Image 1 (cartoon, rainbow, N blue to C red):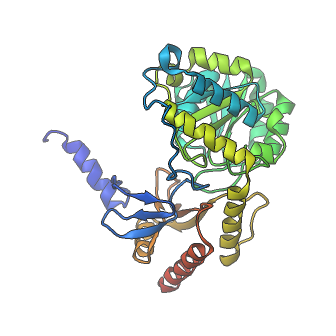
Image 2: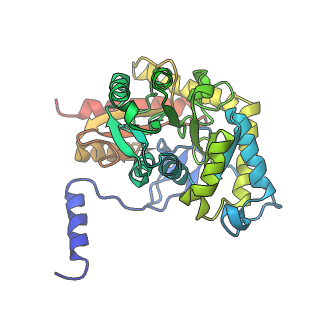
Length: 381
């Protein structure tokens, strides 16, 4: 065997299965993206839900580098102010910043769920949450997606065996766009003395009267012990955060490895997030525009909109190769809609994942729906 032949063979197997990934250098402008070969497409693949990501924020006083981790020299007055703003935004005692949403999710779960604890985790949770479970010294049980009865049965049978039990879920699931049964999970958690930890990554800035997320929209923020958010989606920047009681945040600062041993967010990023956060709290116009586009897409596809609308709309295809074919056809017609395949989603559930933005126009959404119907009509019966 030649050097790294085993890696080459595995990549060939991924290619045959339609699962090979490659990096493509792309240029983004508002709702447009190039395909890597010079063709401009309408972008329906971004998590830039409010259209902030490509808008520059000029602050010449903000440094590019933070120079070190938060506990050394990386935590400035800008970082402190943003953390306080996020705590206010989330109606918690405190918040702490992380260099990425992945670091926030994996670090918070791995740190807070300690030996003698139990994690009960939704089967469709994001990889960052799953990796946090794997890094934790707690015991883990995975429950079928959204199955509150399974959670309650597990708590009834096993609660007395553990010091603390964490119920772990996303609020908006990243590949399905559906919303966790958070009210029911709160009731079960309170009944059995468990703690709820919710990743609001795809809801932060989008849902709720002030854009705080699903927990705000459902009026249950005070019932959720730990909320994790990201600054790289609707806020259009980079980084993650955890909002919770002061003692929880203090514990993370002292024990969370993905926080302690990572260089802190750039002050320029922090300045941008601070500005975006204020805009979201002061003005709902972008969120209103996003809801209009989501509603339009559901109406055009003759789908019944949910009570709480999310900007993620999956179109289930099934096989990897067919999903890649649909995505390629859409590129030919001028649209970028990514093909999502295992291991990101379960086997046999490959899909197109449409992500809507406040910056999409009514015409762009209408044309996308027309193109989807054209491709569907062309499929062999």
